[in-house]
Every structure is written in C-alpha cells, then in structure tokens.
Length: 524
Image (cartoon, rainbow, N blue to C red):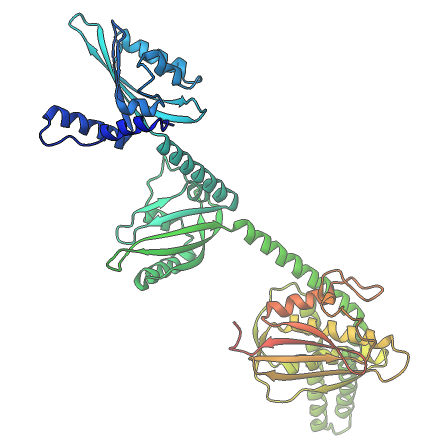
C-alpha cells in the first residue's frame, strides 16, 4: 500500500495530477494523459537499458510496487526484491532470457509488499534489438490485477461449490432458448444423462430423443404450454440412457423475460430421483408384504367365523339337494317343489362362492384397485365375517348405517382389512372387561369435506392418557402378544386413500376409532 507521506508530499502529488494549462506544450499534456491512463488502469511501466543497467519507473509503478518516489531510487534489483519469494526464480529466468535475446513474453506473478500483503501482477515484457542483434533495452508494463484475481478466485470457488452441491444432490442445471432451441447443460447434467460433452453435440432434439417414449409427448406439451403462457413448469419424466437403463428425472423450469415481455430463456434444474423412486418402490413392496402378513394373522383369528360362514350355505345346499331328490322320488314327481329346491341350492352355492372369493381376495398380494364402493356393504361384509369371533368373546354388534350414502372411492380389500383390524381390536379390548356390556358400534355418515366418516366404538378398557397418537406408530402395541403393526398398516392404507385415522376416548369407557375415505369424485 502507498504511504500517505507528509503534507508536502501530498501537495506534490496533488500538483502532479493537476491537468496542464492549455498554454502548456503538447508533450506535457500527453505525459499527463499517459500518467492518468496508467493510474486509472493500474498499469505502470519500466524501461531497462541493458548495457548500463539504468532503469526508468513510471509514477504508477512506484505506487503498484509500494515505493516512495522521494526515497526509493529505481533499480532492477529493487523491483525483483518485491517479487514473492516463490515466484522470484521464474521472474529472474524470464528477464535473463530477454537480456540474452529471447522473444517478448507475458507473465503473471505475485508481489509481497513491506506490510506482508500480496498483489497479483500481469507483466508484458518486450525487448528492443540493436543493429548488432542484441537486446539493448527492455520495455515492460506491470498491471495490478489483484482485484480481478480475487474475483476470479471467488467465482471459481463458487463454481466448485456449486458443482459439488449438484453432484451430491444429483441435480444438474440447464438453460434453453425457446426461440432458437439453443441449450446449455452443467457438468452434472451431462453426468445425469450419461453423455460425454466432448463427444456429443448438444441440442434440444437430442434431449427429446433420450426422453422415454411414453413420457415424450407429455413433456413436449408441458413445455410448449409453459412457453405459450410464459409460466414456470414442474414435470417428472423418464430418460433412456445410451446403455438402455432408465432414470427418473424431476425437472423444474423458470422463464426469463426481455424488456418487451417476450421469453428469452428458460433456466431450470434436473434432479435425478431414480434412487428415491427405487426406495419408494421398495418401501411400498415392504408395506404391501406387511399388510399381507397382517391379513393372514387376522384371517387366522377369524378361522372360526370363516368356517361358520361357509358351513351355513353348505348345510343349506345339502338340505335343498336332499329335498329336491325327495320331491323327484315321488311316484308322481313334484317338479315345481324340486325346481324351487334346486334354485335355493344355486343361491346357497353362490353365497359360499362369494365367501371363498372374499377370503381369497384378502390373502392375495394384488396392487390396490380404487373403484366406486358402497361403503355400507363393505362394513356389512366384514361384520358377517367376524360374527363367530365376536360371539366367542361375548360381543354384540350395533350398526348405524344410513341408506343412500354416496359412493366412496377405495380398494375394497384394503378397507376390509382396516375394518377387520379395528373390529378385532375392539373385541379384544372388551374381552379384558370383567363386567358390563360388551357392545361394538359401527356407523357411517357423510362429512361436509367430501369424505365418508366410519366409526368403530367399543366399551372396553379404553386408552391410557397420551397414547392416542402413539398407537399408530410401527412396533408400538398395547397387547401382550401384539406385533405393533396392525394400526400402523391401517394408518398407511387410510392415508394412501387420501383419508385420515384417529382414536378418541369414549364416555364413560371404551375407545372410538374413526377414519375417513373420499367420496367418488372428491379425491385430490
């Protein structure tokens, strides 16, 4: 840094920077203009006479090298002493090369000033060759590029941090001109798409060819609509890599406008969400398997109910078949009675088949099928399936299912599983009550929020304070032999349907479980 110096020195510098009068010579004005240009550009110069070693420094060179013009005599050795120790050998080598007749050159090096601060210098050195072919003088400029180097360093660090952040988060950035189709990709964008920027000609058409054929039309339409409406867009799609593998991409684009209001460019990011998609698929598979295990466990508890429910139509079939044979065995066969008996047989066989179908559906490992449902019919089916299990526990059922409810949207088997679990839980809770009525209440009603509310209430022991939220956590159970998965699976199923589930204390005793399912047409 240049010293402030005495007041007289400051006055001298002030006078030196005062422009000459119009009456001064042209050479004086030119000298002043050159000095001002050097000061503004932070560029000094020096001239070395090789044979005599005499050297000239411009005023700006004194400032750049932090020398006081009043005390420092110009010399090559003084300049070299200011050069950073790590850069000195290289600077010495280049100056000696010029002295020995080498060609002109440019060179960047550092200065270490008297206060320990560092400056970055860009030097241009040019030799003047005498008639004898030797270097007679060296003319050099020294530009202070410290600010530029610092800015470039900060920019490089920012770019490095951004590149690392993109790499860690699997997020690339891109820019596209919707008018020309010109496209820019960051390094991470190239990596996501599995392409080498040195060997690939980037274009929007090439990008579209990599989009999965099933997603291409949707992406193009979304992009065209966004440009037409001058809006941002957010779209998931898949790409097919050169090796045939598939990646899941989530892309977000934002428009930038010119003064006239037109879109000049879309800038956005592409997030590689393939691993997240795989994790979600694995989680869904695990949840589905847990749900199936839970259904098997529930079915095991309902074995008596299932046997009772199947036995009824089978007994009726046997009775009706015997009756039909008896009517046909008369001396004059009574065909009308035999026909009626056979028709009853067909109905009972169908009833048995329906029971078996429902059981098989509960045991199957199918994906959810959301269809229009009569929710009251689903509740009645589960009540029928659990009659024997409830009777064995001394539980009576009270239902309040108003007719004419709108259709619900859901998967019949999964909702049956929720009801099965809650009904059996209620029955188990009432089994712990020594005295008093054991009544299980089931009801349904429409809510103003386009949902149907289903309630299952028992007269059991109730929940301890503070457990209403925890009971839906995985592996948390209040049963001595419970796995802690039943209610967690119920919550997962209900939320997947777009509903919610909760538990409330019942007065004077017991618990009320409630959950909602969306009305057909009202699901988000």
